Image (cartoon, rainbow, N blue to C red; front, side):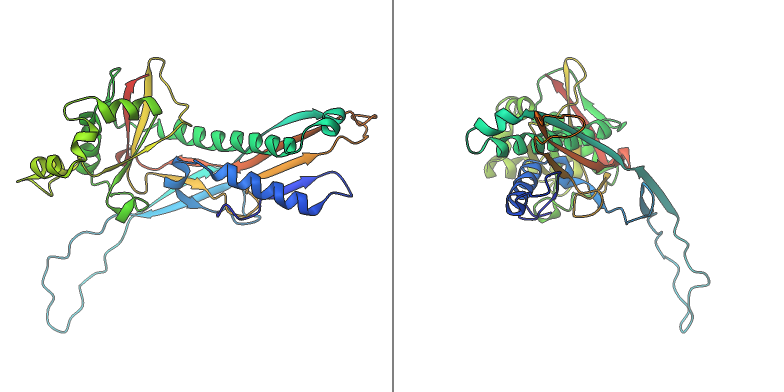
Length: 308
């Protein structure tokens, strides 16, 4: 969903300024989408209208090799049957709101309402990424310990995924990398600590020396087949342990945030008289979204543990 797209916006005011509504909706979308990290790595599925609350992903098993020569002019004796696997997830609703008084609305400096909308969007973004992290933490593939993160730990995770035939993530540059999602501390420590540090192996000379003569094999090249993304949204922690992730393609599914009945909404309720507030003393600005995330295969995502 481009940041220029509009989101749903609701208001209880009959004389609402529609232009302002559109401006607030665009602001909400741009802030919500900004810095979403794990969402961009999921296999997206959109819930059709009036089709229930369950999303479904369908997968085919890999076919076997056809090693029997064909008789000239004849087809294979039998067609090959492909086994299928179905994965489902249930859409759930999430949301929150902030209260503001009528007096506050009257005296607040210009731009205050926009700041409330930004706060609502930030909360929505943080919620989505947190839900993704919690679900990804269910993977049974794990490397690392309660120690500072070093490059070799990420190499071990990449080598594990490669040995499990996990594909590089299609959204990485050229579709040629696994994607590492790390907490700020984990990433900054890894960049500068260890032998070699991440800054060392990113130099061409070091890369050439370590790749030769085994270039192309998982053990030799997995160390470099990783792109790093720092996420300030990571909310998964095991006490003294940060849970970071190395993600391959088709590792997990997400519900689409594209325009549909499940797209996020910013909801503005002005401070106007009502049964709940006869004097119209308070209004609200909030958000809600319908969302689902589902881990597909533990062979395609590895937890990378490090000290907090």
